Image (cartoon, rainbow, N blue to C red; front, side, top):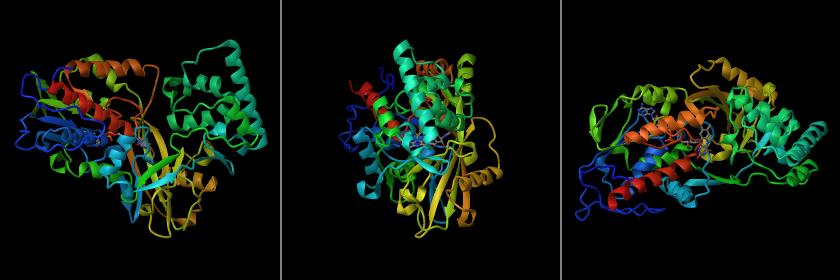
Length: 473
Ligand SMILES: Cc1cc2nc3c(=O)[nH]c(=O)nc-3n(C[C@H](O)[C@H](O)[C@H](O)COP(=O)(O)OP(=O)(O)OC[C@H]3O[C@@H](n4cnc5c(N)ncnc54)[C@H](O)[C@@H]3O)c2cc1C
């Protein structure tokens, strides 16, 4: 990698190790006046800034531009009358990368600042609670549905074995090829149509790798006759901040950077000028964007039409979250549940926010949070949506109307990347051009990937290391 600072003086610093110790900037480590702009102060931008500082970059040389008055982006939480909820859907902390997860915890006060929870998730099916993943909970279903699911699963398994067919490219066909008709009809189709708001043939099956649990047939047969099997152990334990919601993590990361974050300062203008950049008119040597690719055609100058078109056509879903504060002393010990069916209202998932941490609700009261996705770029319904959500949850037996203290609504314009059949071409046209310009990208919508916050931190650590290494050789 070429030194991102071109011919200008470089930091003589080592690569950021997995857990980088702080290195003081002092007389032995003079900080040259090289300016770095980070666009966006969500967890990606914040983590990158922290890793650069931990690697030796002087804080004064960093500027974070943030459109919102608060840092955190999709990790932000909101507190209303003592009830805290995550504004972009229920967030929990877990990671396969222990160092990254510990770093996140340490930034937010260490282990003692977190609650450790066993994940307990269910699918609401009529008046039953079905273990998640669905194919590991078949014996929780009514007998007829169990029979349809297990025969469909066996038929699909047998057909795959006999004809050796490759995985179909569209998600709708893939579901039937992989799980069979019973599971498709009873859960996968209705649930995924609620989340994606599109015909499932519109989506590719590529995105499912590693995200949709893939149970061996023996486990499905055991589960159908009532022998418990755990299908998805990755998140079986998670962590959540004691106070302040998930945002406590980004607040912690931001705490040492606050003097360098320009809040309420949307980036409107990024112009390349020789080997440097101007951001909102100010000159920088290096720019890292964590902003959504879909925003860049209106921000980055001199973008070819084909690239701008590819960015604008990337598909995504928005999200409406509704907190429901309840005058009820306790809930069942659930983490979150899935609501696949239309008669359960528009919400696809409900998080038991007050079960996550004692700080999420006043003593003796509880809360739920319902999530409803929306097709990106379209306007979600107004107040009637909350009514429809509540009606659905009453119908599903989760609450009664007279328990409700109040509701509160948040919206995020971009929540889910939608993997349509042209996704890979559009994304590589966008990222290829940005790379050719030397504009770095990092983050969920900046790279249009289905990344969780820990993956944003891991990728920020990698990018910091490669930027620093490029200058240290
Ligand atoms: C429903 C849902 C559930 C999730 N659950 C989990 C979970 O359980 N665990 C987990 O770890 N992760 C979870 N995630 C993923 C996690 O929220 C994201 O991976 C992470 O927050 C992305 O961070 P980011 O910094 O890349 O992007 P963002 O958070 O989107 O940050 C981008 C920042 O740029 C700012 N910005 C936008 N436009 C401009 C502009 N013009 N100028 C300046 N600033 C601008 C925004 O305000 C924002 O602060 C979930 C996400 C969703 C949607």
